Each structure stands twice: as C-alpha cells, then as structure tokens.
Length: 115
Image 1 (cartoon, rainbow, N blue to C red):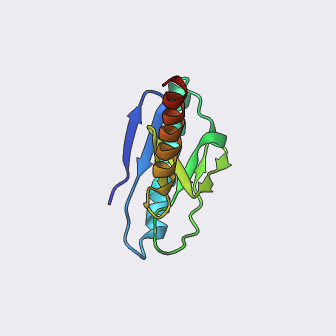
Image 2 (image 1 turned 60 degrees about the horizontal axis):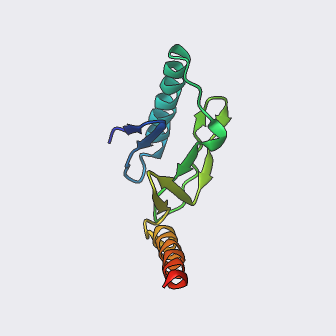
C-alpha cells in the first residue's frame, strides 16, 4: 500500500500499512517520502524539528525499521499523540483512556471543591 500523508496546521502524519515481507520496500518508500518532504521544506523555507519527529510501528511482531529525516534517524516510540489522541504500538488506546480518566478525575475534583 502507498504511504498516506495527512497535514493539519503544523503537524504532518505519514502512515502506511504493509504485509509481512514487504518491510524493505516500505522502508525505502517512506525514506523517499521523508527526503521529498525535506526538499519541499527547503524550497518553501519550512523548518522541521527531527528531534520531535517520532516513528510508531503498530505490529504484533518486532520490526527493525530505521527511517532518516532531516539529518537524523527517527526515534521509535511506543506511544504517539496525533491531534489529541494517544496511540500505542498495539492500538489498545490504553494511554488515551488513561489520559481521559486523569482529566475527568481532575475536573470532578474541581467540581467537588466548589459544590
């Protein structure tokens, strides 16, 4: 499957799904897209923060995926926040649910103090 890029304000998310055995071609394709993004950024004077750029691999098996962007290898993360939703590498949404529960508990505590 071809990578898909989604942009919102100053956030860009590139996603791709691939079948087992297609890792090499997928990594190559993603590195090409990241390189094109670097070129686009230079052309339009847009700077990226590679230290804030993360890689989330969602899979049942472990993959050694190395992507290069703007002079640095991307850091693989077990969790990633995209437009306010916390994703984890198993798509359990536990980090997101826990954050919602913490926020709700804080708001409930505030309501109890004023009532």
